[in-house]
Length: 235
Length: 235
Image (cartoon, rainbow over all chains, first blue to last red; front, side, top):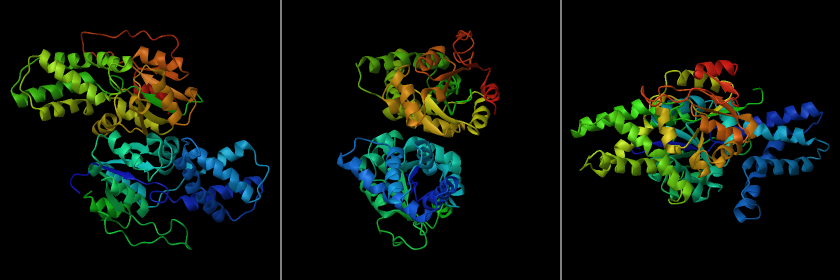
């Protein structure tokens, strides 16, 4: 991996544990408004809106729309599905910021700090710049640079997302390593010439839904967590 | 300044001492190639190409061109003016990276670290993303986010540069404070509704050319350096 200058990271699921964090923020919202619900199911339902809403942007049904706004559209729909009514616009805005306040997987801050000593580390997320910037401060993620969908105006796995990131770093795709817990993300990055590192996160979807842990043989690195990734990258 | 959520910084001259750093890198280039010259004058001459080359982009004579490339065009011209010939393309590329390796003013890293504890801190420079990212690692600048001309495809003082930065942060212009040693930059940011902080850097152009230290009365804050700025911002 000698030629690698930068590592860029998928964030939701790979760096942070969105499910338990969103569940917790939603439960706090419920407590504040006297609403009972299965908040883990609420988090799953909200995340379930993610691909369909990005699909509306990819298909052109919606113009470019940042993820904060897609999250809010999904939230309004989800509140209806859960039969939750009478919530103010301000309270919906506030709950929507749950995605700005996600806890890291326990190894992530330390692993990122080690990697930062030798490499550029950046986001390569579908989350917008404000979301990523606020989350980094909340979770203690020491990014050198915020890259991703908003700067390319294209959602992963669109090739533009990865290639715009490399271009902004002034690097060839092969000098950039994509790190993700999602094999489809890595396959799309690898197809554009990026190096790939797979870090499985078996608990991303909770205890009852385990993602396939078998890495595609094309991946350059498979690491148990970010500390192991740092060790494998020589730092 | 209660509503301010983010401080964004001019970088060349305000955060880093480009003149002494570029002089030093150019002198090292000279030593390596057996070339003698007044390297401080060389640095001044190179910086002197900055506004004219950005002007070519502003006027449409050049399409959008990132600052690394404008620096290199200016460098080739400058080498000719200094009668320096026979330098390889690779050596020119390497010397061009002098702008990625600029030393901070002594108060900058500590002041930025204090400000980062309470505010989002970001670049608002005409330097491109790669330049800013590499410089931050070289100089120890703890940016939360790299913003600026390349993301707006417009060079300051174009209003788009400032407004794109605020938009990417999900903030209103009045929630963003522009920090600069250059009054024209602050006046342009202030005209778009950003808050303004003036930090004079009397040595930016060396001992023989002192910039006007009298702050425009419109500025929200005038600070002696970044430590004083942090104190005035309550951190």
